[in-house]
Image (tube, rainbow, N blue to C red; front, top):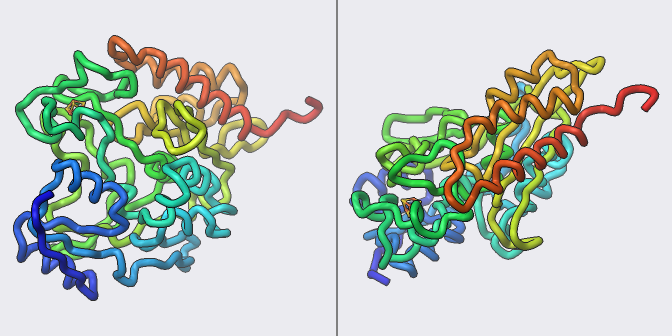
Amino acid sequence: MNGFAYLRPGTVQEAVEAYSAHPGARYLAGGTNLVDLLKLGVEHPTVLIDVGRLPLDTVEDLPDGSLRVGATVRNSDLAADPRVRDRYPALSQSLLAGASGQLRNAATTGGNLLQRTRCPYFQDLGKPCNKRAPGTGCGAREGVHRDHAVLGHSAGCIATNPSDMAVALAALDAQIELYGSEGTRRLAVTDFHRLPGEHPERDTWIRPGELITAVLLPATTAGAPSAYRKARDRASYAFALASVAVVLRVEDGIVDQVGVAFGGLAHRPWRARHTELALLGAPATPAAFEGAIALELAHAEPLRDNAYKVPLARNLALDVLGRLAPTPAGV
Ligand code: SF4
């Protein structure tokens, strides 16, 4: 591992200033992904700016009925927060489906959103990888890619985003609050992660030096029935082969509110807009669910060894939609 300096600023402002003053700096919070990448030689910062102890570790009710989650709230604390469990169950379930208990105790909300793909070629300095070393090629495309993307991939990269939490946040219409040299701004979670295109080295639309300060969970999805389901190779401590987060409110048998996002299928949480458009105002029936999911997954472009993800994602989504839909009277 290369040597680096270590700074621990006391405020968000100081952290952002320190980043601008030190080319090659990286923010460090829980360190559950970054420290691995340092040891592997994938990341080699000149300075680590420790933001893990900034006063961003609270979950607050806002007057408009939304919930503001500070960026350094630990994944385990967020999953256990009674307001999250009660109003946004998909978020709590997604957090508990991620990593291990020990990692969830250390990992932060902001860090979870910024974690990098676990593509094995990305983590191996001896292999070609356009994300780690632009222009070297994509080892996974003709190599081992059973876990890789079926939606939105490019010739240059077929990696998937590893976060469970981000999938639930996408379905719940959450926003991300960022602070940088130009002040504060907000981005929808669905607009935060990028598709790989010709620049797979860029995972998100975050600007250089910007710091995630909070995640905002809106009032519009508070209390709506929601759930998260994940398929993986082991019962715990494994990334999603496919996953789905669903928000579904049904009134008199008709879909009144719907949000569907897939994980494990793409370079970003995949909000299923085709599915949602088809379902909004439609009867909440198994046939409608099946047709709406098929519309979305018709856009899948599986690779040699990962076509199984398409029926897997379909079945996960049908299961969760079916469980959230109220049983018709008399059934
Ligand atoms: Fe690198 Fe992306 Fe290809 Fe993996 S899929 S080897 S991360 S370019």
